[in-house]
Image (cartoon, rainbow, N blue to C red; front, side, top):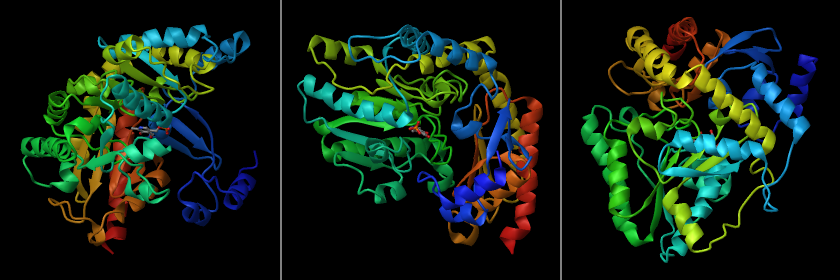
Length: 454
Ligand code: PLP
């Protein structure tokens, strides 16, 4: 490729999905990523960059896996595509469903495939309302999500999510969706006792249920750890309290595992870390490590039993539901994860190693308000005054882009979410690469200091 020409064309014809048109134009076009291996991506200008984001929170097994290419190749020759509409199926999605059901454990043994995380949440939205109708409780329509939660870019996804900037575009949320506070101790309740805050954040859900009437509430939805919201790790006690509230009022509990699933928090699914049992889960990204688009909804037995008993055909499905090639790649991806023990490694080795490196080498930095992580999901809060959560310029969002851009210049891809730098490296990351990630973060913070203090 002629990289300069690609960048020039990019400036002229931005992908409509890209948010930062002006910034990209100022850069003279997007950074063109041309190839990758392991945990390292390469751009067209010859830079090698440590991928601290696993693509977009998804390349769990790292880049360049020949086995995954082979799985796709073999399946494409055998049967590249077939649908699930004519009372038909193909072998890979059936095998994958059995495999995923085994990982979800016990009560969740049914799986519905889609292509993206957003579609998984859209599927859940309709399935849940359909379920309550079949159950003779059609008033149960309301979903409760959280401010700053992210559940995708489709209409239901944006609505369930709590991103105000997304709501503003397209007049969302759709009716019947409520949002409550997020469990963001550092940002929203700095200095509060964590256990007290956990109880207070869960109580906000119960208060809302009582306000709108429990008989009208269908489900609560949340990411075990909010990813796109800024890697918000809830204090201990939050999730069990949320689960207890859902049970008390007979409300379904939905965990959006699109980021937390497939080993990210050191368990196959994030809810397993918190010891709760959701009724439905959305999963995507790590299911295929992003090599091909595939997502799934895990559904509890009691919901499926209701559908079957009442003869409720769920009239739903996508052209690519149960796509054989995507499923074949996902199966092989999960085999790699099992063979290389990536979940256990994240829980017992690399996750604690990252947490220690954050504590030892970042937490004391003058710009760092908090450096937190769980498994291989981490966040660094940039503050103007050590020991507080005060932001530069008194407003969130000024420091994040500065530090993020310095990190990228220094060879580390991270994301800045307001003034929180987040990281989510491939689960194959080595100790040496974790050291490099932390070194670059530290160096970039050092370099940001005179810029931010000016
Ligand atoms: N849910 C969560 C928690 C996510 O992080 C994302 C994407 O980042 C989605 C849903 C949407 O997934 P997709 O982008 O595949 O539609």
